[in-house]
Length: 231
Image (tube, rainbow, N blue to C red; front, side, top):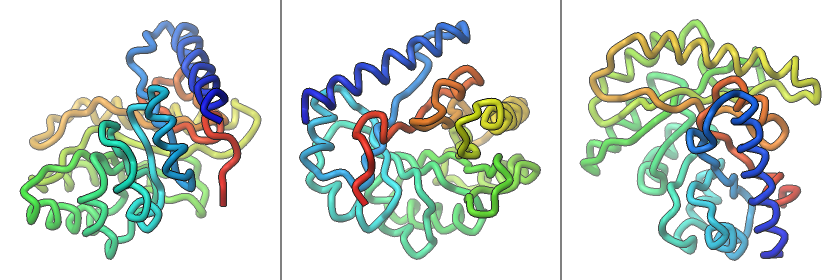
């Protein structure tokens, strides 16, 4: 298993490098997050040993059970939907929360972080696919939400995250990434008190190369590293 894991990670990094080269970019601009949700602790630790230095989790309860036994070192990202009643756990488990999509959630995060005397880096999740099943604020609301969050001193907005429409046709997927990049570029013209925009988190196992071509700085890869998810 460890050898397969190492080979998968090398292959994903090669694909990141090739996609970056096609886009005239440097691979160092792109952060790889190993999406470790549902994976056993020993597999997560093996991935860390193989060089994964950012990990992503989707469910608070799973993270509470497994992260205490995961090796120290990697940056821990919450990439799944966060319910307000789980915020008290999230602020202690994670180094970045990528799924902030309402001001009510942001206010709860801010209050919990204030109690811990910490500032939490966050990304604003935007629904760029238009699909009702996907989370995220509406694209037209993204800048308004960013400005409202910037009034909260214990949150630091670093950028935006989105999940594209799922399709094997990358020309259906690409507009989702283009839209998020346009939002990011527009947002970058606004000065923030409590944040600095530098992150475009977009692209997963099925589409991260297209995301890189469209400007992604952070890709969230699970299946291509770990194989099919254990449900």
